[in-house]
Image (cartoon, rainbow, N blue to C red; front, side, top):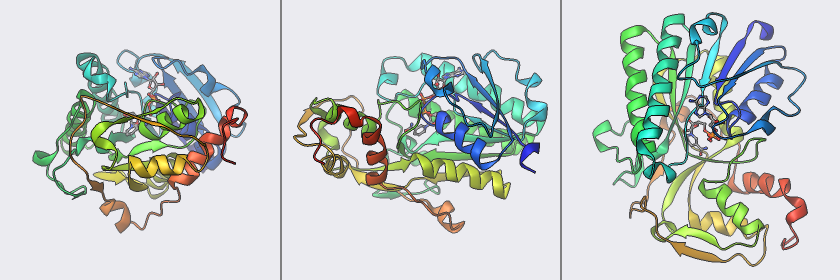
Length: 319
Ligand SMILES: NC(=O)c1ccc[n+]([C@@H]2O[C@H](COP(=O)([O-])OP(=O)(O)OC[C@H]3O[C@@H](n4cnc5c(N)ncnc54)[C@H](O)[C@@H]3O)[C@@H](O)[C@H]2O)c1
């Protein structure tokens, strides 16, 4: 059956997409996989050495402008990863982030509804920013406290998708992903774990937001994100629900202690960020737990993968 499948990935060349595209090609041999990216993040390297088991096609283009109607009739499931993704930088370019992310999601979700294509939508646990110590998918919208234009746009995009699920029969899942770590060909280094790995490897001080050191936050191992996506495909579970996808919750202190197992002489510099707040919270996977979904990642595993990519730089290594 695998060769009947046709997957479409927007934003395919980024941190998540560049892992998803090759893992789908291996898990579903001979599946057709169409990749769309506008090179906002300039990740040509994600197209190097693709697995031979996939039948790939790459389309360079902006999801806000491409004719999706021509692509969707044959598509089984669409993974809409195209977005401007740096939450901190979004403070300086809120209108651009909203225009790109919300408009892109609107076009993609409306096209999926029209053609009966299942939509995987990656939201973010940054929508929570909650006052509660523990939050899950039942936290009411009125208690969500997004801290950036990026997270505000995610909430608007979620609402748009729920509206299309109810009004147009869109088959979809909304996955609120924790901050992703773990290696991929197109990986980026602006989010917490990856940024600290890079700074440690290159002998820089780790720039930690002042209030964040002992705050707990949700993190997601990239391999677990791909396994969750595969579960939705295999179970044909496009039920319009929102799912948290979080491998584990950690403080920045714990992240840095894990990095110290791989690199000696790690120094920290506390810095200010406009996203800083005093809130510490854990995000639970209540819905995935009910489905008995098993998370296989760990901070140690993801950080080790990342460190191994740069093994030749590890002249300061603890090992
Ligand atoms: N990485 C994380 O920690 C994380 C956490 C939660 C949610 N997410 C979400 O997962 C998705 C993928 O994240 P990522 O980390 O791979 O991001 P990324 O920035 O690495 O990749 C996004 C890709 O989208 C492309 N893109 C941007 N706008 C586009 C457009 N209009 N048309 C076509 N392509 C476009 C970029 O060129 C880039 O290759 C995003 O929606 C992001 O918000 C990521």
